[in-house]
Image: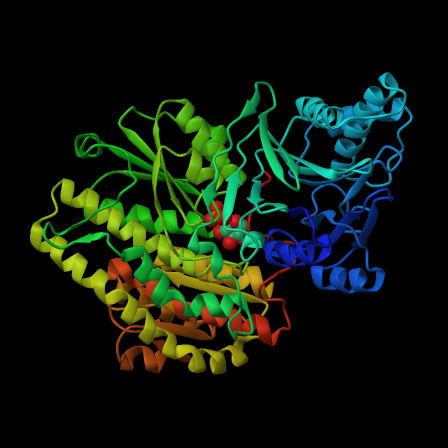
Length: 621
Ligand code: G6P
């Protein structure tokens, strides 16, 4: 959470800082601020307890000039979302300024030590501690040199500060007395340096760098970047200089505009035919009726020897894992365990040596998923990432993996990443199945379904107008139930999560039959139930559950996949989606549910792309 940016060079810093923060706002939007600096001047801080748009107005009014600058958009962890707690923070007597992404676990102890030395704290944040620590280190160096500090002193001050920190951090530090210098450091929170000509950039991810540079350096944990207008050095905190690995900025990072859509979420919902095509591209091997992946980094023999799979993730990615369990067990007959990453990292379950662990993550930065994978890797398991963001921490740390190629997902509520994850998991299940018992013919049938998928999703999107009209009838409800069975139980969970996330309506997803064991008590004329009831082995069972809700006066919205007179008679509203085999139904059935939550959130006046209290990339525990 939190997004940070930095600029140093020959241009005014604030335009890049503001545009970078706009692109990073998905990481948090409780408050925002920038600090700028010009030669022989004081550091100028502009910050607001609000969004980047408000910061932009404040910056236009204050016009803080300077060709060196840092910026921050915050997701509050320590201290409320006030202006005082907004970053950048000042260290010492104003000679340094800093932005921080992460959580400093030992900040109380460090703060007590600093207070004893006379440092006064303005904010309740853990980050201000880091600012004062750098200032304190620098003060010691200055004392040794009659008040003067050198660039080396600044680097040493950051190095000695980060050595004292426990927790996670990505920081960028600016020094009043060295306006031609920025120092960035990371541990657990991502940082990318953008390499320019006569100017350099730094940011939490690559999106702010698009259009400014095409060459980037991903900082690794414990690395420190010393950034000057004409030069970048990378050091390891403990081992000195390292050769920076300069990489091209991937094309994927380019697609960050709304392109005429009112919201990123809607744009991303409508991108799904294409994002699914991208996930499938080059991965269907028709000759062998299987799928192929370039980056698993295991031999066919090793993959054939896998006896158990753990799928882990958080939020929507955890829902993908649940679908993955059904897919892999059904198509490949390999036992699958689905674990919340936040539980797996501390749970220490018995895991045999023939187990492989997949972390499913859009961002590749989710702290719990990263920690769970690290823990499993430490125990000697092969770890894989199913990930969207190229070069993200999890993509880099996993032993192998599969990229989604869904393009940037900016809306906080995940849509296209979810359906791309399911597409990849379907192909993975096919691949594992074909290594085992799955016949050539069955493989061909699955491939044929996968090939249809983008067009089917395209067709499904035609339900938008109808869903919009239905949404108006349900937008005032305070509670919703989402019910489905088998492959569509996770679809129900995801539908409920989407609604909760962006419209703040309480919603529960349940396996339809489980409803009788509690949630049915919620059913009354004000509590709509959304039933996912396509044809298939559990169709009749779900119809019975639907009848149970109707018998208690609950309004029903049904998602069906054929002209269904039976359901038409029972349900209050019916949305028909195209038919597809059951293992791909969660992808198709999710589309009307995404649209429903989007339209309801709009009707309730909610901020669809930036729902309250949430952030897209959860880099804290
Ligand atoms: C946050 C986002 C969710 C996302 C979850 C996991 O909660 O708001 O949309 O599903 O993190 O993120 P990941 O990037 O690991 O998929």
